[in-house]
Length: 503
Image (cartoon, rainbow, N blue to C red; front, top):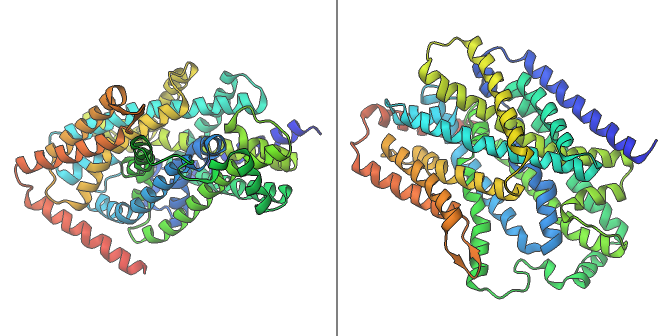
């Protein structure tokens, strides 16, 4: 049996397991809320691993190790920013959002939470935020499909289009039939595979090289700056801007619908503490493993006198060189899992945005079965549109992801935080801030000033503008009514009580 046959066998096993989980989730899904939010019954470990796996995408397995391999630890600032942002998100957003969505008329989507929390009778806030979700995520899903096509092209020599269609078919299969529960359960398997691969490969590489001392010596011989977070550069204004921009990725967590919807699906607010411990442990281990793969790859390919044409293939190449072909095939599957877990989560959020936040606004009398079937059709429609866009991508994967991440972070992040922690926020303040944040991201990405050729990541000005506008407009609006005040206090008390009970 050839090496490629072993690897394809591993991928087939992985695909069958994903479809099997989707079928299982289908048998457990009987209504629209179950399809969109798994009946709010996700245990902490499922919520934690699902949030992590749907967040990291192919960046964890390809982008980050490749960047570290090419440039050194200077590229690790994004990982540091994401770790800080994820911890703050689990600590300050997760418990209170879970409690507040329950108090605010059992909200099951982020846009519906905004409307219910702020008692927006005009429906404009819900429609606007639902539209933002649908547009940004269609392009986000498309970027992940681009990554899937590139994976198959680089790993197996297939055509880009055929590889992309394989990813679309399998992901669409288990997502359409399994809904949110199917996406979450497959995320658990995929997240476990990703973490296992990022533990095994660097350890195997260090053993092959001869130890950690030999590894670091070899890295320094190739590039003395690779082990420095500043890469040997002086702390210039451009360097400071680059570091701030990298750390600012952490701001995006507060506004990512496909991540914070996992908080809404937990059993109760008290689950957040356990989920945070599990999720952060997974994230730190995985990020350290990804960074280690990139660094150790420098030494491995130098000492074994092998060449690596594409840095983003460092994990795949080391796995193929160090492990049995069948195990290497599961490493390939882990890379694919990173991509597919994000696609499935984003398809579900797109579906919920269309059904809950757009369709139901105009057809509030639609029955549960109609909504369930429409949700599945929307998953199919978004996947088809994203596939068409991915045939001829207009930018690199990182560029597309970075822009969408900034768009959601700057549009929804301040709104989520202010909804949870400032009782004076009004619907018009939230809407004005959301629109101004999104517009700022668009304008800054095209016309933002540069310092020595380095532009500040657009999420920073977008987040600031959104917050300022939301606060100013809210203070200029009519004071919130007594019902909003009572709900705010009830949500705070519920979150606190559940967290105390969970201790």
